[in-house]
Image (cartoon, rainbow, N blue to C red; front, side, top):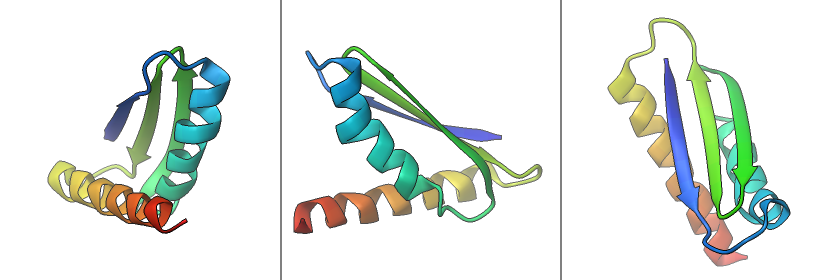
Length: 80
């Protein structure tokens, strides 16, 4: 089971998307409970982060945890 986080950063090169979006999100989502693998991909103006969970993980629980960690990482970005 997986949760995919899609983010747009229009007009930005893949390296900028990687440095400013994909890498920080991937790093934050590594701490999500029951996650097995976190993979990030950067493209022109877009980022995909895949959070792959242990077998049997409830989809609604997983989505809630990902949203929690996204919100906490967003709060940390604002504070910086």
